[in-house]
Length: 85
Image (cartoon, rainbow, N blue to C red):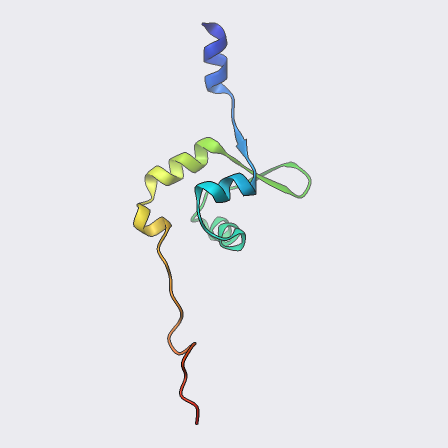
């Protein structure tokens, strides 16, 4: 029984690829959301390698409504089908 308690306290670290499977956005969007504070902070366990705590990701998923997490932004006005002069 004491071993089970230790396992609960262990932190599981996720790589960028694993996070992208849970949060369907691009890698660039993920890092941008982190930069502006809309996504949990990543940590460097090895040089040049981002890792996130699984507990942080699941807490973020529970705190943000699904519509906000996966909202499609669309194109800015006037970016396509401009009238040629």
